[in-house]
Length: 104
Image (cartoon, rainbow, N blue to C red):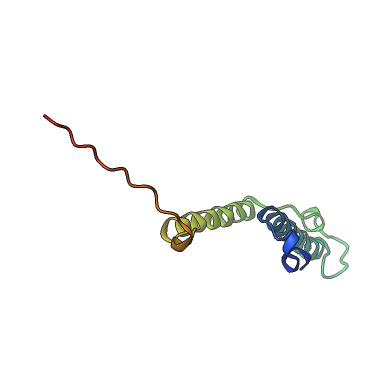
């Protein structure tokens, strides 16, 4: 809120750093919610398999995670190709060079 609220701090670099910190914080929050829950068995049974005590992601989970990141990158790439990133009204026209006529 400080970065967006105060005009002095409202630069592209500060907003990018703030966004990266927010996304990293959300990933840490998700990790802290999901992984301890998966590591704790529901019932305190005696014969718990080792695979149920310590969680490690399978190749399917890693593949789905990497595919979701790749799909996001593809969507951003397609969006930048189809939708102009810079407003047309903000673009300056390039100077037009006049063609020189050659005398034969």
